[in-house]
Every structure is written in C-alpha cells, then in structure tokens.
Length: 111
Image (cartoon, rainbow, N blue to C red):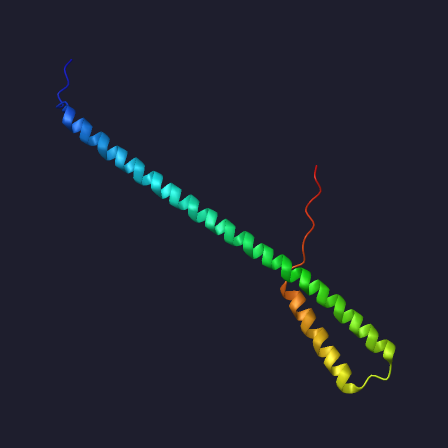
C-alpha cells in the first residue's frame, strides 16, 4: 500500500541532517564548556583546600607557641596583671581562630 503522505525530497533530507548536525555540535560545545567550568571549579576548590590546610597547620603551631609562652610565664612566677591580661587575650584570640578552622577528620579505615 502506497503512503498517502508526501515523501521528503533529497534536498529536504539533507537540510534536516545539516540542522541535526548543527544541534549536535552546539550540544557538544556546551558539554565541553560545562566540563571546562567544572574543572575550573575543581581546581579552585583544590587551591582553597591547600590554603585551609596551611591555615590549620599554622593555627596548630600558634596554639603550641601560646602554650609554650604560658608555661614560660608560669615558670617565671610573679606575673603582673598587664602581662597576664595580654597573655589571656592572645590565648582567647588564638582559640577563636582555631574554632574557625575545622579539625581534620581522619579518613575511614580501608576495608
């Protein structure tokens, strides 16, 4: 039985294939752009992670230094109120900074 619908011409088929090819290329470009954007985001996040690790290490060292200073002041004895107030203020600030930086969580054990 013959089709009652008109058959597309070769030119119409070629035009349709060209449109499909253009759409495919456009979608491919968008996919590449998204992948590049995601890689940029991953690179930036990795850079931030390095900075956070550095801040954490420096904060840990600072906390240790404050403890050493506190021990030296305690060992010296006869601490004046201004020195004790300054030491307490520094200790408070260091602990405030330490609270801003999350502690590193140990990775779960491998199975």
